[in-house]
Amino acid sequence: MQDEQDPRGPAGLRRVVAPNPGPLTGAGTNSWIVGRGAVAVIDPGPADPAHLAAILAALAPGERVAAVIVTHAHRDHSPLARPLADRFGAPVHAFGRAREGARSEMAALTRGLDLGGGEGIDETFAPDIPLRDGEAVQGPDWRITAIHTPGHLPGHLCLAWDGWLFSGDHAMGWATSLVSPPEGDMGAYVDSLERLAAQAWHGLLPGHGAAVARAADRLAELIAHRRAREAQILSALAAGPASPRELTARIYADTPVALHPAACRNVLAHLLDLTLKNRVAPQAAPGPDTVFRRL
Image 1: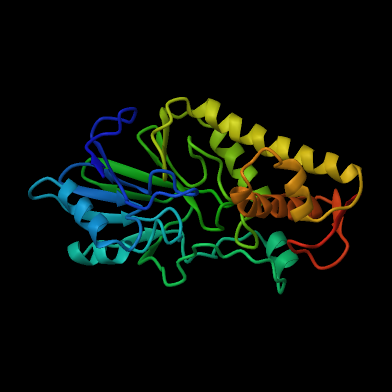
Image 2: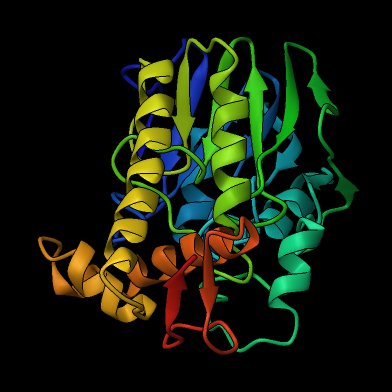
């Protein structure tokens, strides 16, 4: 599916939606085309020849891809980066491989543990040019600046462009983000949200779903949601120790059961963050079935 301009996004921006709808992808992954002539493509998407053809069809005659930028190495965002880049001889930019960028405290806590996780990671992805916090990629009529926003993945990037924010999977309008340990880090995720919220944006251009016009409201809502979940977990543990699965069944009682596995990953991420903050303690090596107690 393709539309020349998101109905609530800026003029001159093209969006091509990958045919990969689902509970965690919404209508599909957004591949964004920035500029005219020599363009940048952000998040080329899954390994789908039809989607590659749709991106190429969205280019005007004579246009070429000058840069491919990947917000994070999940299989719904990064696999087409190499085929698209090779077609035009363009470099691929990203923070790094999927697990690069983890904060040392979380890496130390989770090292050697069987936490599950790893959902959808593109293990083969590697950029040609690492794109770190504050660095920019520039074309004839566009400049895109990287903001390192770890949380969903350690190397997740949001991208600033002319007052707009390509928010990847960090901040979407249609749903909250999955934060699944050990790659996902809830403390880093909320810190990154607060960093984004400290700036004024025309709007959010997410990895899934439509543009979000009221960026400040949405970022504040996401921060409040995570703070509320943390409070719910601490309140539930005040009644007695419990495992992430048990807490999920209590806290997400009104959520469809099919979404409980993803919810449990978020609960575990909160518990690991609360462990680092010395507010809870696991009674054994942390994991989905480990019992945690409130301190």
